[in-house]
View (cartoon, rainbow, N blue to C red):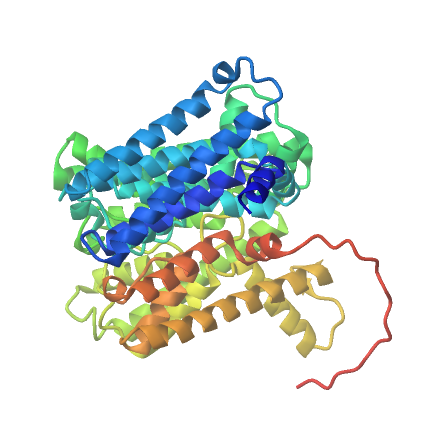
Length: 571
C-alpha cells in the first residue's frame, strides 16, 4: 500500500496540489488553535493538523526533486522555493516551542501560514490544468482572487501588532472584518477606531481599496505601469471584469478607472481635511482621518474611525455632503463617470442609455429615501433634532442606504415600516460596474420595463426609446432569482441560529448581501453560525449574482437538440 502511495505521488499531474492541501490544513490548525489554546483533545487535533501541514510541504518538495529531469543545479534554480520551505519548517518548530507563550505562538503560526500561502501561490503555475481552467473561466479567477485577499487580510489582522491589546483578532472576527473590508460592506464586530492600532487600520484601509477596485484590476494595472505586455488570456479576463467588448479599449478603460479613483479620493481627502480641521486641528492625524474616510466613502465601504460612526457629524453639512458625494460617485460606476465626463468635455454629443438609467434611478431613489426616512422618523428617532438636521440626516441616510453603510442617526429604534423600506433600497443597491452591491438599479429598470410591456401587451420591451433584448431580460430575472434564493436561505439559517428579533436579523442579512453595512446594532451579538452566514452573504453580494453563477457553471460542450414545444399553465 505504501509503495502504491509513492507511485501515485510521483506520477500525479500536479504535485503542487499538495501545497493547496497543506494550506487548507493550516487554516484548520489556526481555527483549532483559537478554539482550544490550552489542553484537551482539540489541542491534540491542532498539533496533528500542524504536523500534517509540515509533512505535505516536505512531500511536495521531495516529489518535485525526484521528478526533476535535470537535478544538477536544482538547488540553485529552486533556491527561493527551498528557502521558503525551510523557513516554514523553522517557524513550525518555533511555534511548537513557544506554545506556552500564547501570543508568541499565535504570531508564529500566523507568519507560518503567510509563508505557506505565499509559497503556494508562487508554485501555482505548476498547476497547469487548474490554471488553464481559470484562464478560460474568468469568473473563477475573480472569485479566487477575492478569496485570496480575504484570507491574507484575515491572517494579517490576527497579528498582535494590529490590535491595541497586542493579542490580535480571533480567527472568526478577523475573517469577518477582512471579508467586510474586501467586500466593501462596513459591518463590524469590533470598533475599528479603538480596537485596531495604526497598522491594523492601514491593513483595513488597504483591504477596502483592493476590494473596491478589484485585486485583478490592480494587478493588471501594475503590469501595465511596469510596461509589461498583457497576454490574450489576461485581456479576456479584463474584458469580463469591465464588461468591455472592445479589446482595444481595455488598457484605456483600466487606466481611466485607476486615475479616476485616485483623483476622486484625493479631492475627497482634501475637502474632508478642510472640514475636519476645525474639530481636530491642522495635524497629521486629521489628514489621516480625511484619507481613511475618503477611501471608505468612495469605495462604499462604510468603515469609520469613530465609535459612533458619523453620528457626531449629524449637523455638519460639509462632512455630510462631501461623504455623500463620494458615495454617489462610487455608486454610479466608472463607466457612468467616464460618459458624463466625455459629455461635459464635448467628446460625445449624448449620454448613453446606461448612464441615463443610472443617473435617473439614483436621483429618484435618493429623493424617495429621504422622504420616507423623514416621514417615518421625524417625530420619533429624530424628534429632538432641529428641523435642518432632520432633513440633512434623512438625506444622508438615503444616500448611504443603497451601498455605503455610514450612519448619522442611531438605527436601533426605527419602526418596522422604516426597516422594511430600507431593506428594499439596500436590496436594489446602486449601479452595475460600481463598488456597490445589491441587484443594481440597471437590473430593476429592466425588470420594470418588462412588467410595463407585459401589462400593455407589448412584444417589445422599451426603455427611453431603446428596445431591450430578451437575453438581458432573462439575465435580470436570473439575478433577481439568485438574490431572493440566497436571502431566503440566509433568513432560514439566521432565524434558527440567532435568538434575536427577526426584523433585525433580516435587516442585517439584506445589508450584508447588498454590501451596505448598516446594522440594527446586533452584529457583535451574532453567534458563530450567524457570523459565518453574514460572511457568506457579504462575499456573494460583492461578487454579484452573475459572477457567482458563471464561476459555478460548466462550459456546455453538448450539441443543441430541438425538442417539441410544450405549454404550461401560469398564474
